[in-house]
Image (cartoon, rainbow, N blue to C red):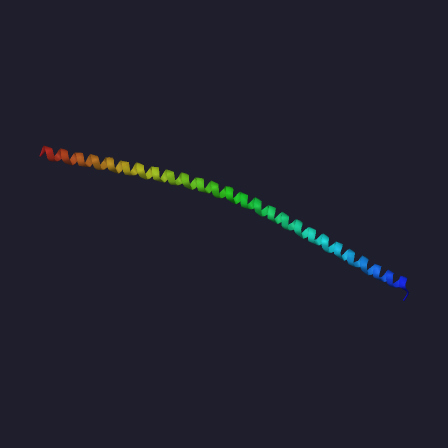
Length: 96
């Protein structure tokens, strides 16, 4: 084989390798772009979950406050009722 034939063969091999590297590079770029998109989607999802959790936390706090207020009102009612019963009992004792 002549030297020019060998150079042509080497050049064809080199072009094939370069084309192969270009294809691999494009695949890698595409893969990285997909990963970046997945990360972006996950970040959005995380933000939405944080907002949802915050809203749920606020709702729970409101429910707890309402429950505490209701329980306090019930206790106040019971205390008033007990006071009335005690007064009634004392009034009965004093009359006897």
